[in-house]
Amino acid sequence: MSWFTSTLRTMIGGGPRASRPPRSANGASSFHLTWELPDRPASGAGLVEFSAVLEVVTPPSTEALYFWALQVDFADGRGTWGGGHTGLQWNKRYPEGAAVNWGGYASAERGGAVLAGTHSSLPSFPDDPNTVAYPWVPGRLYRLRVSRSPDIRGAWRADVTDLWSGLSSPIRDLLSRSSKGEDSFLVRPVVWSEVFADCYAPSVTVRWTELEGRDETGAVVRPAAVRVNYQAWEAGGCPNTSVLVDESGGLLQVTNTERLVPQGARLSLHPGG
Image (cartoon, rainbow, N blue to C red):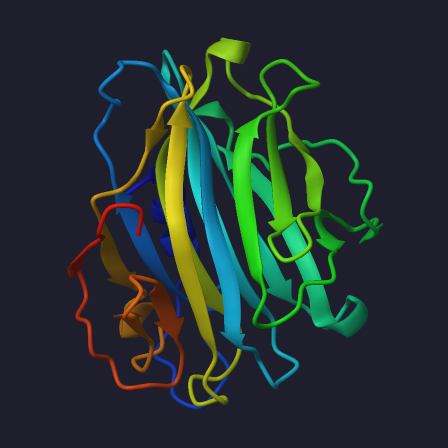
């Protein structure tokens, strides 16, 4: 488990949930799919890009916040210095409830502060520069990507691409806490769902496909499998979330459903899946 996931789980305290709002510290129930990758690619080069395709298959029908994200950790020669998450949100503050986020934190060893970032060209609120308006549509495919910024040495950029229109939108750059700037690289990718609705709110389904990374040589690496993690009941997690694999190899995260895949399960992915 990455320090970032561990930090999130530490932040999420409180008692069990049923049909009531969550009692975790941040008000959410989360479940994760951790990628199974080698520590270093065969080339020996560091990983400098991760991406995943997200489809909101069955959208929320409540006003509660939903967040579906690709998470990465940032590392340099001294170890992990921070982490970030980028993804679509169902967020009532934004037009049609549609937003996208790119934010992160320094590691505890580097102070634990929220990472500073550049201003996005997409509309946002002054009190939340991490989240910006983005007109995503249910049933459409969006590629979320984290890669080195082409403009700022040592910074990490997230962008979102609508695969129906082909339009790619930079979200913004997160600035580095690394002591080595451009030598920084990416480790420990995870995709997850973070749900602020009641456990028995109408079921929502999202689908993840095309999980992949690239190293400094441009070579593509893909996970052989993902490992399932559900936030524990005792920590405020819902007992009725589940992960499924569909006939095309897509990874479904579903709320308010029977849990068919247990905690800790390893789900193998076919090549390119």
